Length: 253
Image 1 (tube, rainbow, N blue to C red):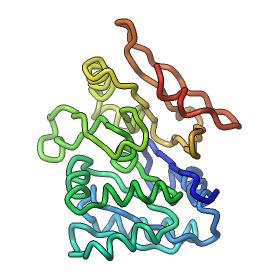
Image 2 (cartoon, rainbow, N blue to C red):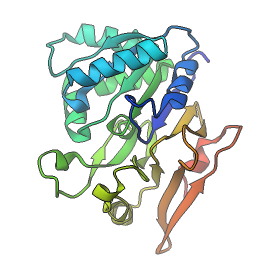
Image 3 (cartoon, rainbow, N blue to C red):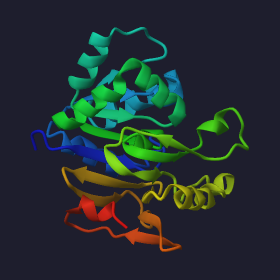
């Protein structure tokens, strides 16, 4: 799988409860190594120490990874060190949190360009929530709610590795708190004209080169393609298959 571009896009789930264990095992497997070097980028959680400790125990203890951290907010790192950490890893895992803040920090530090280089190099890229939005051209984000819980969802620009708008947590345990997520997605897509890729908690899209496959860690967790066409709104279930399908078909109306 040398230089084959690899992504595992996870809609949501708690690592402390091992809710995405099946999905994360697939991520580790894609590296082709028994004990891969996994770089955690926790920018979206403001480099939370508790989150970093949890990820270390989970990916290190349960999945046998060698863990490194890229702390862009709590450490002053040179561009050389940042580059070595990113391009010297086997897997890059991005945690959840404030997507807008994370993307702004990445762009200032040049991390956005380095992650694109890692993608081209064939390093496995993965993540959940903010860490799944970042790989797309755009995402539906709750970033404004970190300061104002009643704020609207916003459209945030990502790295553009997949040319669509991504919505994580499509069906989630937080549904009662986020009843406006799906209506806001519908309105956002009508305005932007984007194709939306909506992923439930405990579900993921695994991308290998120009092909993809939907995988899940819980029965009933799914992925959907959502879009407007000829004045009508569509929500299409993306079926789980034992074989990979062309990515092109996922991204077209």
